Image (tube, rainbow, N blue to C red; front, side, top):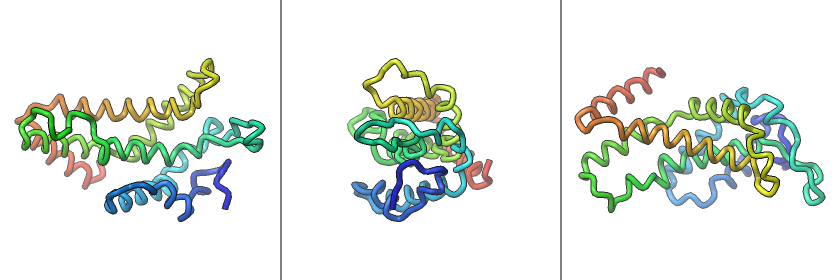
Length: 186
């Protein structure tokens, strides 16, 4: 099966491709969660990426005469942002950090509860459309990967800032409110 130049994210709904994107994960729960996020991205949020910015063929070379498009970058970017929240956590949550364990664990929980796939994909789509040409002068870089990485880092930094700004006494109520909002779909 060919996975290059899809016309829609729905064209990427394939077990072989998703298994490839999940390769290397050590925790089975991460594989299950990420597969679910991939499926949700493909089947529910595909419309966010139905734009020439994402579907236009780019990167045609002698080695790759058919080129590719930016839809091919979306699912790996979802894996990258998921990893920043649940696998390769920011250094603040490193076990050697000096925070009290209970406060750190609650702050980590608050940080992880801030991850919202729809919000992230909307931000990815909007910011990429606005900035897709920002690195055109850097002809030796894969500008698509670099811009998407910057969008991931910005999203993560915003959620980390939110978790850090909460006082220790507010964290438990913030966790409760966030869980409630998530359950209600707010």
